[in-house]
Image (cartoon, rainbow, N blue to C red; front, side, top):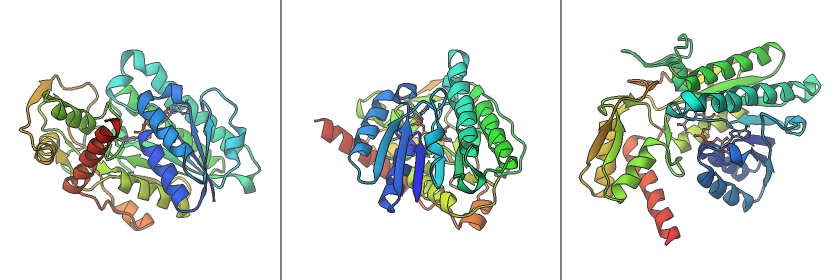
Length: 318
Ligand SMILES: NC(=O)c1ccc[n+]([C@@H]2O[C@H](COP(=O)([O-])OP(=O)(O)OC[C@H]3O[C@@H](n4cnc5c(N)ncnc54)[C@H](O)[C@@H]3O)[C@@H](O)[C@H]2O)c1
């Protein structure tokens, strides 16, 4: 298959591009590195992809450049965007709208462009943040959206664009990822910050009291779900939760990390961040039924894997 992966210099996109290439597919890796929220990490991932057989790199800004050539594929996996709830408020709102909504609108229009028989299948990355906070049961895909930040609203808007493109004849599906972690996690994300703080003997920065819980999902599980969704022949318009079914509190995750790092956790609490959900919780029955997918990696194994990556990275840096 010829596969376009947008956001391939990113955390999830890098893993997904590599996995498609390893499975023998021809990959066009697309990114606009200057739009990255973590440009240094993006450059490292991009350089690593350049060395992989089966991957061709294309620097393209989805919100501004001509996208016609990207539609010449069997599958387009759209992972490009501006992640981050906190950074989407205030000055970050316009960039969030541009890279999550304008970029998605333009990409979907390009994919609708070719004759119907030649249109690619499209997988669009969305987020658990569209739900807001979970109550006493996991969020089901049919629950109404309750976005609590510009980021979450941009993801609701991107989902609606995908739904409209389906009405116009595109075979598109949407994956709602829940807090992703693992090797190459972005430096602004919680576990990355915790590990680096602990390694430098600094207190771990926590927003709120740490009792908030998350369906932390290892990037290998997210990658497996994404590849499965790209190949599964899912009904157009399908929306799937891609999350570990058991939420873990931030405090419990910190204790696990501290144990792995051999340190006593020292936490510095900051005011709860605007737009942060108290709990994210994924109902994964639909993904199990339609994709045969469920998350396999629990927090102990997954965090050990991320800590291993931080250590190897330090060793490489000397
Ligand atoms: N990481 C998570 O926990 C998580 C959770 C839910 C949803 N998501 C979604 O998954 C997707 C990937 O997330 P990630 O964590 O890998 O993010 P990331 O920031 O690591 O990667 C996104 C990539 O998109 C690129 N990009 C941004 N704007 C672009 C544009 N206009 N044109 C081309 N490329 C552009 C960036 O340069 C970056 O490399 C995003 O849509 C994000 O909202 C992520």
